[in-house]
Amino acid sequence: MYTQALNATDSQIQPVEDMSQAAAFQARIDAEERIEANDWMPETYRRTLARQISQHAHSEIVGMLPEGNWITRAPSLRRKAALLAKVQDECGHGLYLYAAAETLGISREQFFGQLLSGNAKYSSIFNYPATTWADIGAIGWLVDGAAIMNQIPLCRCSYGPYARAMIRVCKEESFHQRQGFEIMVTLSRGTGEQKAMAQDALNRWWWPCLMMFGPPDTVSEHSDASMAWKIKRFSNDELRQKFVDATVPQAQHLGLMLPDPDLRFDEASGHWLYGEIDWNEFKQVLAGNGPCNRDRLAARRKAHAEGAWVRDAAAAHALKQMRAAV
Ligand code: BYC
Image (tube, rainbow, N blue to C red; front, side, top):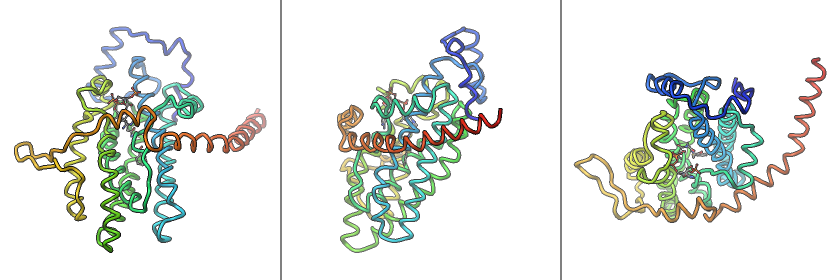
């Protein structure tokens, strides 16, 4: 179902930006019609989607690393089973998303090549370390919470294969968020040491989570086009604000302090106003200089190399079956 556009030749997907085709395409978007893999689309729309969906898929795959690191150290069998299920879900999300991105005419091998060569982006958040068990709670609560805020609108994305993939992803993310919040509830109601561990994790994850939503609207280079095409339904700053507004009461419920001295409720706008985000840190992480960028890529490269025999065996099996069928 997901691979129809792979049969398009290069000449078919060249930018044939025929004005009337482009106008008809935008009219379909404005009428909330879904664009499907074999429909005509502007080359810039196709490229924007391939970029965003593949980065999203890479994020899910790299996102397994900080939490996978804690599976063997989870404090109980129940916690271990839940974390294992969550990490497996992230892998599944990566696969749905790679499949959706493949409908845009780029192969899985090309996407993997871009990730492993360091040329593709994945979410900045996964370049931070998970140093204590409380980080698993904070990741589920905040990272998955931010992901849900960003991804629910993607279920209404104009591109059908992406929108459909996101429906299941969002259902699973909401389980992940509750799993993390429940860990935070347990720790924040536990001993003084456990509560301090929860607070420390919140201190370290809060600001990087706000960065997940991307650069401010004033400098977001892709937002205008993506909003016009209804790939994005809300701007980076709008989603960031929604996340802050939703999360402040949750932190209050936990009895934890958000690490922002400037955070205050603004009666006039009805929003929680937050302090300055360190965009220099964000740029450094995107440039490959975050705390874990090198480790993350090294882990993915090692896993890819060690999985070569599985890919070879699967390809040999598929060839055998194809030969048997003719
Ligand atoms: N990290 O013009 P902009 C998850 C890049 S959750 C790295 O605003 P756009 C998970 C951006 O790609 C995380 N790069 O871009 C959760 C662009 O660079 P390029 C994944 C970032 O696309 C829990 C440049 O900055 N979610 O997977 O309009 C457990 C300019 O930005 C980031 C998604 O990917 C960042 N935080 O908006 C496991 C959601 N922010 O491409 C897994 C889908 C920006 O020109 N993606 N950049 O080289 C989106 O919604 C949008 O792509 C973004 C950025 C809001 C992220």
